[in-house]
Length: 219
Image: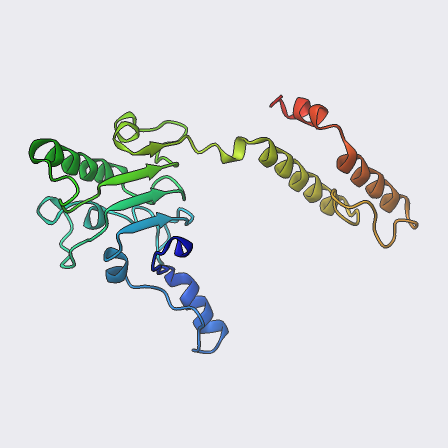
């Protein structure tokens, strides 16, 4: 985003805490505050979904971010300036109910008085992940500027990469050297296990893609 002229901040309190401990109180990374985050025009989400007692991310973006002051259930004094949301992390990090209400409020006001671009609240959202996957909210999908079905993991490249990761995990478990993407290893001339692992690595590396896709049932 910086290459497009945005001034960016990062909100990652756990990272700052880790660096504080690892660097003995002199972290090189400093997380933005919640107030700074609420002052942004655009928020993009790229975090795991967590429920733990320390920094949970479930509904990290709640109605204090997503709704105008008068419609919030949370008593939070800082007025949110957020106008655009890109939800590309995990379903549940953004409160879908609040996001939908925020979008509908701004869109409804715009239709009534023509001031959509000056009203406070969420003007547009891009949603790739959903709270109840594999199900999704029809209403939010309709209200969003773009809505996609979280299918990055279903691409051909992702299937091949996942297959290699599984093969590598099996090789480590079985005690073979190298990885499925390598043509050999330092001890390939040694034990039979190493020779087998080398042959397996070569077969993965040179395998016909169509046959791999057939095995994965994605052809």
